[in-house]
Amino acid sequence: MTHSLPSSTRVPIAWPWAWLTWVYYLTVCLAHLQFSLWLVRGRDTFMGRMAFSELVPYLALAGGVALLGWIAWQLRRSARPRLTAGLWLLWLASAVMIDQFLTFSTNEYAHYPQYALLAWLVARTLDPQRSRWVVGRVLFWTTLMGMGDELLQYLWITTSYSDYLDFNDFLTNLVAAAAGMLLYYGAAPLPSSPPPRDRPVLAWSVAGALCLALGIALQSGSLAITPADKVPPGGFQMTADGSRRLVLQRAPDFYGGKQKGPRHGEFHVLSPVPALLIMLALGMVFAGYGRFRPAQL
Image 1 (cartoon, rainbow, N blue to C red):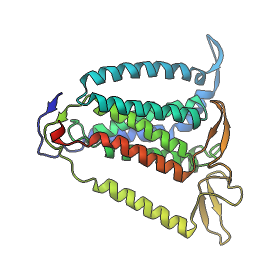
Image 2 (cartoon, helix red, strand yellow):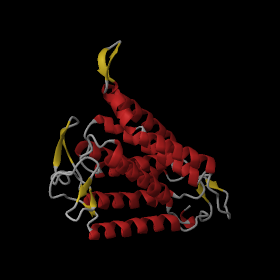
Image 3 (spheres, rainbow, N blue to C red):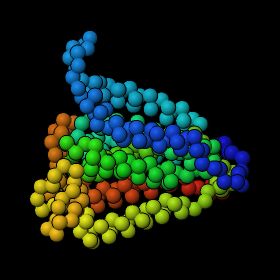
């Protein structure tokens, strides 16, 4: 078991990595529709006419083999190989369940490298020396950014085919972020004294403010989960008093139901409350990777 030298000073944020993180995040958010169209567009190739999306299963298989090799290398160097292996098994089980029940098409596999890389960049920004073990914060900020990405798609970027705010993707992004976190910290040495972590005041403040804002919006009627009738693209509906209301699904039968999809014929669409509860449970388990006592080292 390896240990790092004790640190008594707070490690500052790596601002160059912070800028790179934001550039990457904004790029993938704004390019979402263009990338999706590029992926499914048919084109003439030496193998005949095809779309690059047809190669996704093979790329996923190759990526899975590479990931298994990396995990094997990581576990040989991990300070907590059993816990690390256990969390990787939980991650695999989560990814399999998402693929089996919540995935529209194999193109959605792109969420995993996209948000694993984002989580890695967030971790590199917040903990460049891998000495603070801010696992919970990495998962929180990456997942929150994923929620922002999905909201942007529903409201603006993919209004042509977004019928609901996709909580399936919220969950997928969290699981992908957990992979990025494990890749970053899996082989990191444990500190020989408590890590120099300050209280996550900003994260808790943002979470509290969002919960308060959502509660007020739901109570005031400016936000609704289920509409009485069809909602136009973009999710906003005019109410009887002339005000605008954001509705999370454009028809009343999406959340909690099943939709047709090419992956398994149909898939389940998670409602907001069950999705958030599953995310909270998984997030707490994965965040536990950053909690340990020096006596255990």
